[in-house]
Image 1 (cartoon, rainbow, N blue to C red):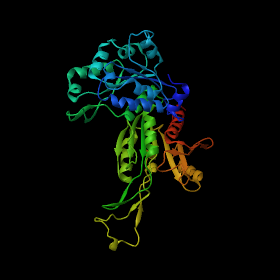
Image 2 (cartoon, rainbow, N blue to C red; image 1 turned 90 degrees about the vertical axis):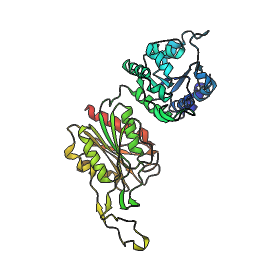
Image 3 (cartoon, rainbow, N blue to C red; image 1 turned 90 degrees about the horizontal axis):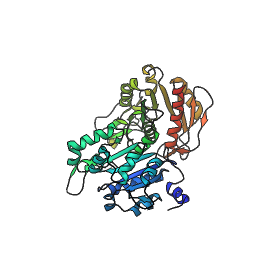
Image 4 (tube, helix red, strand yellow; image 1 turned 45 degrees about the horizontal axis):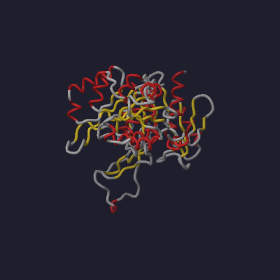
Length: 415
């Protein structure tokens, strides 16, 4: 067994909320998708969790125990009854903060739905009080079978979270269809939400904007900015993980859309304004992290502007101020967070926006600072509220910045 130091080295120096010092039991059953389970074990360990892997007998036919030992730094468990391990199912069940079965085959889910305990993994399910996540993977015809549907419904009724499989390429010769195991980063996000349960934003409708907008100059050119959408996506991810019902209104993103959020894709500032207007009445938290274009061409050319016909100047008109336009439409008690990315007099400009746009919080940062602003994974921000002194946060990963902002949102909702 590896030392605690070795496990810390695997986890890295920056554990991710909420995985630090949490114990995850990862069950791996016998399906071809189990090759992805090795990646999931690595992601969980890198996030800071201690991962106990339970391999079923059929699972061992696809991936060996040594693989998981190397990725987690912990022994792998395989037998329900063995000398010196008679109570492993109880010990593992009690130690786990969450149980994840990925892949969960049709056979395993049928046995779990029936409450059988004929192997170590199914016995752990009966003995644990931790939240359980099942990640199905099977042939599309097996997934479509009525008995599989009944088993899934029953498992959800008894409190297990059962993901729907992805649609995509199945085993060789089987083509494409629903039955593919979701990708490990998506599963990781669901495990995070499971560990946060009950979340401090459970059931709260949160509306987040992210990314740039684009204003057409002609059919092939546009005005935009350097925003990647990383900060807004991190906020949407963190809010969903903490239990919120999240709608993300986003321009063209430079990162993947977040798991769990309802994503509304837009192109122009006006489209973003209309989408925010449509979803705001049902929202109780509004986080405007997008960087919509402040100007648009006064006239959009119908055809590509040739170099020989280029105008001496491009006439611009201001776009709508989305945040200001929401003031009258906000429901009473809605918490509103704005962002101020500036290049000079950062705090003064941010304070002015806080007051003129009726915000509860504004997050200010300097676009010229290395490691902060657009296109990077980190940010250094100052959070300004309606009362109290500005809070300058250190340079942090944008995921940590997102949680720091939401911590303050939760506090405002409580007050």
